[in-house]
Image (cartoon, rainbow, N blue to C red; front, side, top):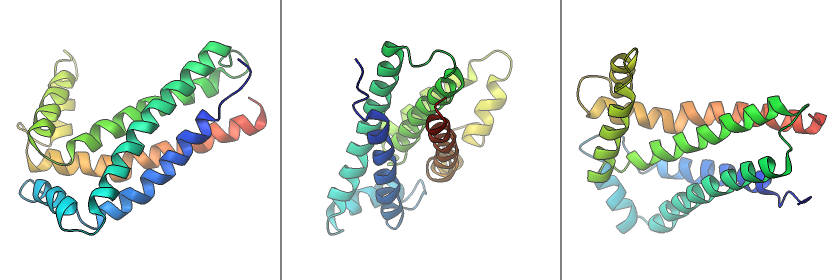
Length: 181
């Protein structure tokens, strides 16, 4: 295979689309345990083109996960991770992890039963680390039980923290590609 199939470019395009639709969704969503589910329901039923906007965001997120995975497989299959590109491979692996974290944190925002148990299971997995697990779990959920603090922290991660880090990683990734490394 000598073709790239533009999987990296498609991933970047999906990231831009997710940013635009995410900002639009932020106009109708309040990260509150009492309102999050109702806001998602109202967005789908009361807002003109709300369901289209939410589903576009969701399907673009699925597409981004798939294209990033396919991009990584293509790079691995063609050996494009070998020197002098090993640093860029590491940046790409970081982008894959960030993409999966963005997908996970976005999955939690509707605050339905699936989201509640996903955050419970996910933070319990982190809490099972014998050294720093309990501290990391406490920091992630903002207390000893999943509730308002956890929702707010994952919302902040989803809309500010992880996209900012991903944008920085993408800038480094593109810069290294343009230099031929």
